[in-house]
Length: 441
Image (cartoon, rainbow, N blue to C red):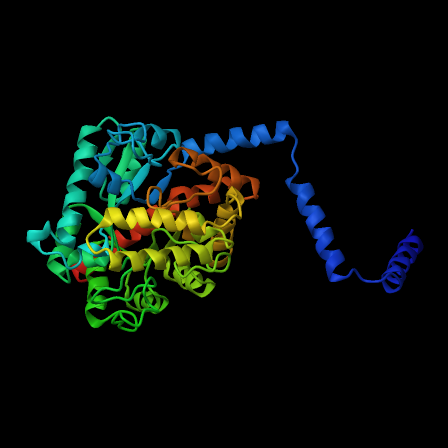
């Protein structure tokens, strides 16, 4: 027996020396074939996986950290109790109560989005940035009160868990655009008291204390090389209050200044991966690793212009054209919208719909780079012009659970992505706030 074993080993070694090694192309082909076999499932297997995904999705706490439906609510009179259209049937949203429930959503952060057009407005013209934010906050509260059978206001991570157990949707708010505080820490504190639980430090515009990625290459804009001293005070005051610092939209230098300054984990409320789609709104791998080390979480954005590498350049050109039109037609948002529609029709790229797999690739990449504890969902529903196939509105959220399970993630890991990671960050931010206010940190 020992002789036979020894002889077989010798023969194997001889064969290894004689047979040619696989070329890189052959090796890639073998790996591709193995992957295709692992992904091929029978209809019965797929049905079982879908049933498992649906059950898991219902059991998990599902959180979306960025939804812009507040804009059609304020500007068009849309009500979340409607079926996706405004009173005149002119718009179609990605979000309403019926579809939120169909998506098994447990918590929504309504974006208090303040366009940069409000930065220099005077009260006599209808109010500035802070006034716009206050109007949106009031409207969210009105909707929550009107639909109290579906929603309940939440301020903490524990609130979200409690409201989820009741079968309701926890309603939270995040300011999008730090210019909303109008360079006042007192205003920041007021927003926190009104229920705002995160603030995106910039939108696409650089403000007086933080650089945005949206205009970082515009020589007409005064930049600060990241955060100013006041910007650092804003971050530290958010830490003290217990408000999450959101770095979506900021320049790369601003991001690293935030990481160096903050005493609590930070979030990217709606950002994706630059490694896959080279748009400056996305995070580089270096940024993802830094965010993971900070203990924070990146919430993946669903916009096809951010997740589809074929469309990133078009998305950048589209944004540049919108900036140009806004300067050309000051205070005429309707004309800007009309001209942008014409531009998109004339410059449309024919690359087809973005597949759902492109979105899941961003989840997958962010998990691999930042870590499974540092990725979540930040849809940007009702704030973007295009979405991938299979993710057309908020009712489609269960598809994320199915696709992640299909890629081999455990149920525990999927639950982290769906909401547990964000809950952990919220809890940690709350803990840091208590320590800072008590003088323990």
